[in-house]
Image (cartoon, rainbow, N blue to C red; front, side, top):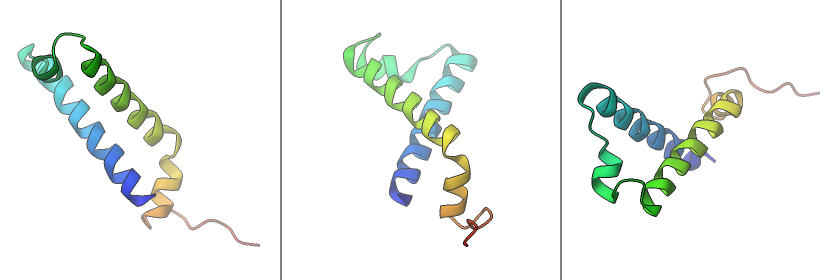
Length: 75
């Protein structure tokens, strides 16, 4: 699971950098590499969105897995 956490975190960084380029320089790196709304570009956008949802909904369990949050209660 930790490997998946790292992969999705890297995808969020890539997505964030791309949005930064779009906002600052009006330059879309994904479109430049793969073409304007090509199938591959759309797949990249979808995978980044999945990474965001993964991190959003599993935030607490990710922190517990990495030892940054409270340990789960045991009975």
